Length: 487
Image 1 (cartoon, rainbow, N blue to C red):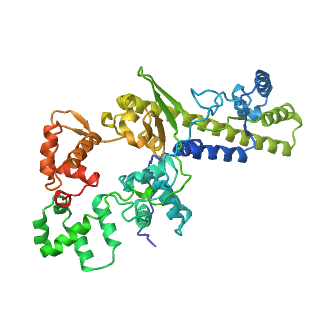
Image 2 (image 1 turned 30 degrees about the vertical axis):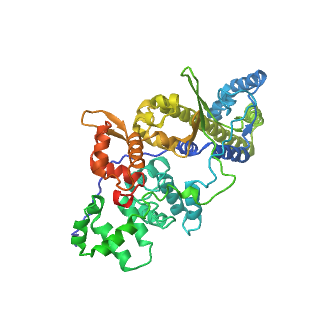
Image 3 (image 1 turned 120 degrees about the vertical axis):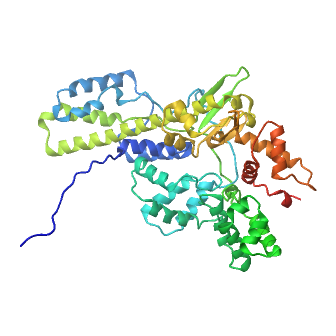
C-alpha cells in the first residue's frame, strides 16, 4: 500500500538570550530604592546563615582564611570551593555611606504627605483576582507608566524586556489583556497609550447619555480635527447642532490629560517620606560631591562559622561519609548564594553611582545654579552612551530613585526631557520652552487670552521658533485649556 504523505525533518537555528540567576538578582536589586533595598538585605540575612552582619574581619582572620585556601588545593573533589576559601571570603566591600563622618545618619526628608503613585496602583492591583503570572505582568506594566499615568512604551518593548531581563515569557495579546485591567483602575485614563485613548477611557466611564455619545464620537471619529480645533469641520462631519457641540466640547475639556499627575495628592499618609538614594552637595567653588545614601544599611560579610566548617570538612575529606558530603554541598550552596548576593549589592552600588555621576556631568549647570531652565535636553540614551551601560539599565536606575541637592529633593526622572531642534540645528530644552509658555499665559490679558498662533509668534520673538501645533502640544502637557476657555 503506497503512502501519499511523508514526514520531513528540518533544522532551524535560533538565537535566544537568557539571564543567569545572578544577573536576574542584580536586575531586581537595581530596581529597588534605598528603603526597599535595606528590607531586602535584612530578609537575606535571615534566610541565609552563610551571610552575616558585621564589620570587616581582622588580619588574623584573613590569615586563617588564607591557610584554609592552601589546605583546600588538594581536594579535587571540591575544586570549586577555592572561591570561598580565598582572601575574598570576607569582601572589603561594605554597605556604608561614602564621604560621611562616622555615626552620622543621612537626613530623612519629609517630602510629601501623600501615598506614592505606584503604591496606590499596587493597592488597587491587590484587590483584583489575578493569577500569579498576571500579577507579575501587571506590576511590570505599572512600573513602566510615566508620572502622568500614561504608558509610552510599546507592548512589544515590554514583552522583550520581560523575556530578557526578568525571564518571563508572555505575548503582546496577554499584555493587552492585563493592560485593560489596569485601565479599569482609578482615576480613569491610567494606562492609556496616548491622549486619544486617555480621553476615550474617561468618557466611557461616564453614565450613558446622548451627550456622552457625542463626546465619544468627537474623540473617536474627529480626533485630528479636535486637536487642530477645526470646530466647523467636526460639526459638519457629525451633523451636530452648535449647542450640542459646545456642550460636548465643554465636557471634554474638563477631562484630565494626565490622570496620574495628581494621584498621590488624593490619599494622604502622615508618615509618608521619600528617602533620597543619593546626596549631591555643591560648594561655592563649583565642586560637586556625590555620595550614596545607604542609611542604616548593615555591613555584609561571609559567615566565619561556615568558613571554619568548610575548612574542617576539607581536612577530613578521606574519612567523609555520605552525610558529610551532603553537608559539604549544603555549605557550598549557602556560601555561593551569600557571595552572589554580596556581589550583586556591590554591582548595584557601582551602577547607581556611575549613572548618577553621568547625570551630574550632563546637567552640571543645574547642580551649580539650581535653575531649572539650565537643564539641557537629555534622554536615557545620552546617559547610556556616557556610562556604556544598556538603556534598560539606565531606565531601571532612574525609576523610583531620588537625589537630595542643595536646591531640594528631585526624582531622577526630573533630569530627563526631550529636546527641540530648530532649523539652524540649535537644540533647546522642551522644559525651558514650556516654562516660557506658561509665563506668557500667566501674564496675558484674561479678557483677551492669547491664541496658540499668537503664543507661537511671541515665543518666536523670544528666540523659540516653534510651530503653532507644537505650542498646542506643550500647552496641553501643562494642562492649560484653549484661549476661549481661559476667559
